[in-house]
Image (cartoon, rainbow, N blue to C red):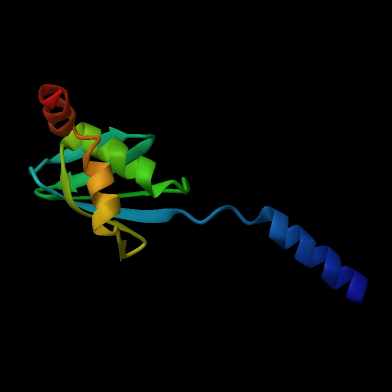
Length: 105
């Protein structure tokens, strides 16, 4: 009996797919429609976008969105907001920020 429970529990652990994380962002510049960035199909309306993926690299996902849409005012992962430092690092990937950095050199 214990052996059977052990086998079933191991099979269940192997067969469970990774849970998708939910992402949302408030954009500085409104965008409408779908935006594809870093293999995520973002649904955007006005100044907000939502997307889901099993990828576990929120900073890279944020940077991908920013490269397509411009700066974000907030970025949430499963309902938890990025810190100010993480948000600034993400927004540094924006084309406008990259242009400013080049102009300053």
